[in-house]
Length: 282
Image 1 (cartoon, rainbow, N blue to C red):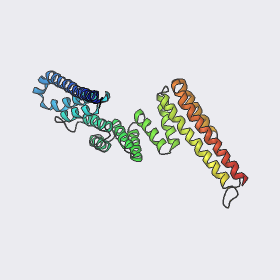
Image 2 (image 1 turned 45 degrees about the vertical axis):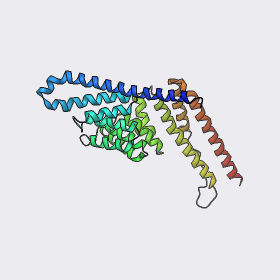
Image 3 (image 1 turned 135 degrees about the vertical axis):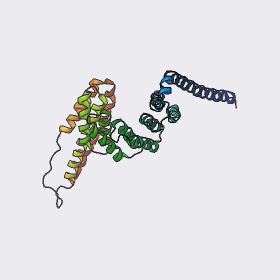
Image 4 (image 1 turned 45 degrees about the horizontal axis):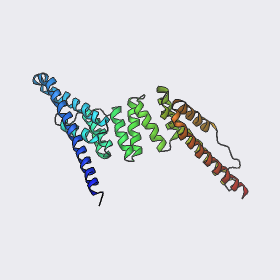
């Protein structure tokens, strides 16, 4: 009970702060609208369609500023306001889709991207936005299809390659993921995150080969099993190590994280060897 007045003050402070933020964004939006009207008034009088085409683009830019600052709500409000001029403007739809994704409204975001794609079905940026929304909603296969469509239109689209690599990793398609990151690294050799994910792809390949080795020894001597066991190729593991070393050289802060990952990987190998020895002793 003693803290009740303090809690009341805290609630009032947060409520006032929220109201102040809303007022601030409203003032900024109003100033932008006034400025836009002032600079475009003569042109709009001569060409009424200029309003629909360019004011909607201005709205998309303003909404993009809000979104880049982490304010998805004001960005959506801005889009809705300017959509009155041109509801099918692709720039507005793109920002709206991104804002809806940021707000966790992934299905609505996909609808925005699909609407924009009616005008340009192969727009890489719009397809990557759709892939992001689909990925966040768990639709990984559909997200990868959107990335592949973007890459078919523009093979060097970095955002599509990066997203396709990530999705292939999630889907267990490790060679395909490595191929995507090969292209990303070729274009951006200083991208530490791309080096790490390429390393992850090869690390998962080495784990898969280790599992195959364990299965070979587990079934050794049973009817239909191969008489000889083949050891996994060490190249995937060494390739992963090289990628991680490159990432550490580019960003030393990744060293502890990658060291922990390699320790965990070593523990898996030790456990695999123990299981193989147990099976051989039976």
